[in-house]
Every structure is written in structure tokens, then in C-alpha cells.
Image 1 (tube, rainbow, N blue to C red):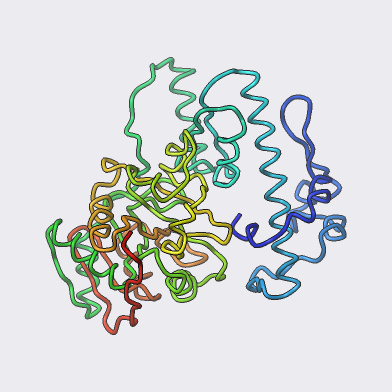
Image 2 (image 1 turned 90 degrees about the vertical axis):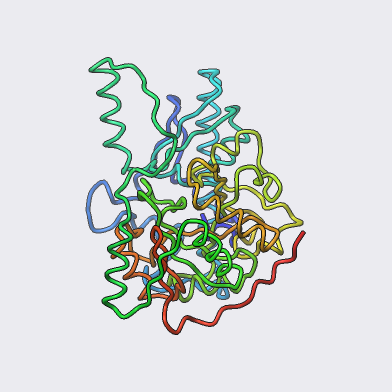
Length: 385
């Protein structure tokens, strides 16, 4: 999805050879292009290679400055376009069949925020709900819910509308490990900590942020996040190079108080629901793109998280504090991990990641760790508007 924005959909006709709609509202794959159904060795057949060209080494970075890098970007753009078209077509057929206003959408493909935004805009549904863990991680939960409602005939019950269902971070564990490692440890009250971190972010520091129970799903939504000022492309490049250890084209997401979302981003009716769990990609308003360069993708869009105060009160307070300093209550929010590793869960995992990459400060509960010999930081450059 991220690479697609750098390419042109020049291979749509080729991609359409792989997938077709079926009369029953689903789709079918042309299996002559695949081998996953006959062997575990690889998922694609020689016919697939003949159609799209040779595969790249998964461990080699994509260089968009080369013809090969552009070919790969064009592949991504073509697959993305066909995927969107198929999903919108299926969703539109569902709306015609049911006449319902709401669509609940799951499966790993429901993490494709660009497609989700098109479904919302074009399918006829007024709202699209994607849970925080729409992929295989949600199957066990769905099975339990189905058994509870269908087999046991239990009534629906209200549950909190948040994604924080994992283990809580142990700030005392972080303090102990950091002291054993010779790091200085500060303990601050809530208000002082929020103001201090807002100051550090405004000075260009990058913060590892651990708070409460971990998120259920692959998106960092404010409890296991890496936070930074959103204004400079240099911040984006530093995060990819020195912290995430991944290709420089990969984008980062913004988080903004729900009440301010429409000021900076073009949200359609129903868009706030998708933005709650960072499940939709929407345009950054043109007048703000230069000041939100670290979170604005090459096509002018961003995968937005619109935060309600009740969902993550401490992060919400930090956004307010940062907004008082910069004039823009938006932060860059990316998952607390490096490439190839899962999002951190325990404080010990967060500390290990903190020590192995270029994060400047680490927070868990009231505990603050400032890395010795922190990397020099670029000062805040956003204009107050």
C-alpha cells in the first residue's frame, strides 16, 4: 500500500488475469499463476513470473531511483488499484442486497486503509467498522463471540470501544532494568511528565511511549508507540534509517485529537469511525502538508488516527500540550518496534528496543529514561497557524 503511491498502475490488465468476480458475490483466482495450493515451496508459478517479471530478493531494499525499483512500484500500484476495485464492487453489491447503513469488515485485507476509504466513499455504506485486529488474530475472538450468541443464545452486551486488551506495562520493571544498565531514571507525576515530553518532542526528540495495556492488533494506537514531531521530512528519514531500519519510502501515521481532525485532514462522513483505529487513509489538507511533512505521504494522504480523550487520556493530554507549543496538536505515531520484530509488549522489550536504536527517551507510566549521549536533534520548524 505504501509503495503503490510511488508507482503507476500500468499492469492493471495483467493483474486482472489473476482474479475475477463470481456470480455469487465473491471472487476466484486463476490458479495457473499460483503454486500455494500444490506446494509449500513458493506461492507463485512460472506463469506469474512470465507475466510480471522476476521476483526481488526480500532482503534487498527497493531503490526507487532505478528502473527495477520503479517496476516494483508499478506492480504495487497495479495490484492496489485492482484490489480496491474488487473490494468496492463486492461492498457495493452487499449494500444493494441488504440496504443496511453499516459494514463490518475483517480479514487481513481490512488493514488496507486506502481501500477502506474508497469503500466508505463509493459502496453506499454510511459507516465502515474495522476492528483493531481484523486479521487472523481476531478469528479466535470471533469464534468465541459466535458460540456465545448462536449456540448459547446469550444477549448482546456492551463492551468498551477501545483496542487496549493486552498486558499492562510495568513501570517498576523498566526502572529496575534501566538502573541496572547504568541509565538515569526519573519519576514524574502525570502533569509534569506530559509537559516534559511535550518539550522534548518540540525540541525534535523521538520518544518511546508505553502506557497501560497493550493494543490488540498490529497498529500502535497510543499505548505502545514511537512518537515524534510531524513537521519535517528529516524526522521521517531519521525514523526509517536509525530507528525502524527500513526503506525510506515507508510512511508514518499522524495522531490528532478527534475534535481537530477535520481541520488538518479531509474526512468524509463516516471517516472518523475508520480513523479511530487508524483504518483509513485520507487526504491531508493542502495548506497543512508542508507543516505535516513527516506524516504526509507522497500522494498527499495520511493514515490517520483520530483520538478521543476517553480512549487514551494521557496521549490526548500530550497532544494538547504539544499543540500549545507548536500551534498544531498533531504527532507522528508509529508502532514501537524495529523492522522484522513485533510491537513491544513488556517494559523489558521496550527497553531493549530503546537501547538498540535511535530513540532518545523512553516512557512507561511515571518512569522516564533519557538515553545517555542522545542523538543530536533538529529543532522544531513548524509555523504556528
